[in-house]
Length: 102
Image 1 (cartoon, helix red, strand yellow):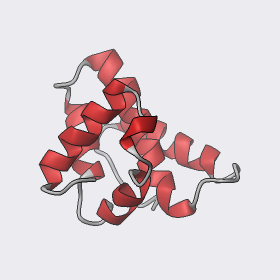
Image 2: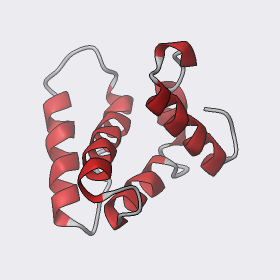
Image 3: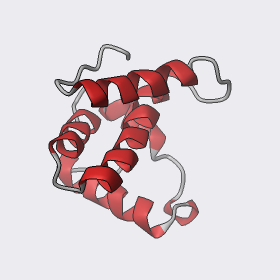
Image 4: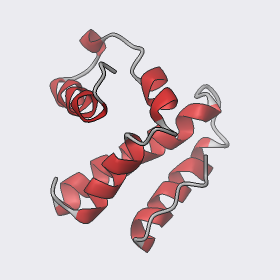
């Protein structure tokens, strides 16, 4: 799923670098690479630029897109008890955006 494109070059580089790193690691199914890379980018740009930045909004739009939704569901198959409070809150936010419990 390296066909995800961003208009922001910095965000695009971060996403592509993370996906290419994952391609050499074992253990994470390939269909989850884009979700992992987007979560990584979300974490970085949320802290650098704030929750309301264009980059963060773009990342959330990609995460909640219909094309990525099956991988996002798979990503969240683990029980919420294993998540920290921030991750659980973000999961709830994404669930609200897509209109289903992830």
